[in-house]
Image (cartoon, rainbow, N blue to C red; front, side):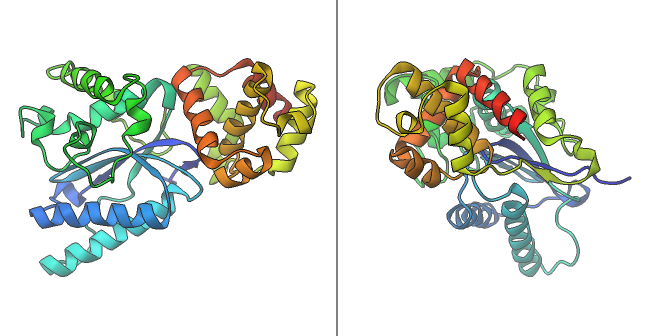
Length: 313
């Protein structure tokens, strides 16, 4: 059977699962777990991405990654190949450590980000390895509680959903996770056939529309230049390019600018390009993306701009 191509989208949220071949252990010692996390950190420094959750179980691993400019396939190839070489050298093994290709599920961020963080970090509790998720050393949960300061996990974007202050957000996050202990496993988060999408019907239709029929071959979202995007945004909104690239606090101008940023990231435009074109700093670009995520629904301006870009294409 032919393999379905992965769906690669800049800014996409991916739940990635890697299993040991024939369900064999991929981590045999404390040092193995540390080696894997150090390799994740190395890949993160070399091919930047956001890591919102992880859990390393004896025979499989979970990563929750938000893609930036570099493809998930490139990130995972370097990580899994490097770790396999380490493992086989250490234990004098030959052959495949991992069972085929890793599984990657493209997920709707606004709807599932918090749910997936909780789901992944509760794996050791569901497996009855520990009673509380913070008792498990090889997951990202303790980073959210301030007990792991390595900086491997990007906790801030998630914690913003739980409270206005750090202390409040951590407390609510802890309650959110602990409240699901004992609940049945959410199998929809784990079904990992290649090309799986997790989200609302609207999300699924939007993704399918944007990539076309991905069964015909590997595809990525077509890259749009920042100049073309600004031109389309100006025409569809009735604003001038000068207004779009100004520091105006006019409510509608801010919304159109946010739409440009969100769609620009989806279309492969980097944070730096957007920041330079719009005359803002990089942190402002990130904040607008986060604001859109927190709302969970697309603004009218983003829908209008998306439609205009499709029509132009």
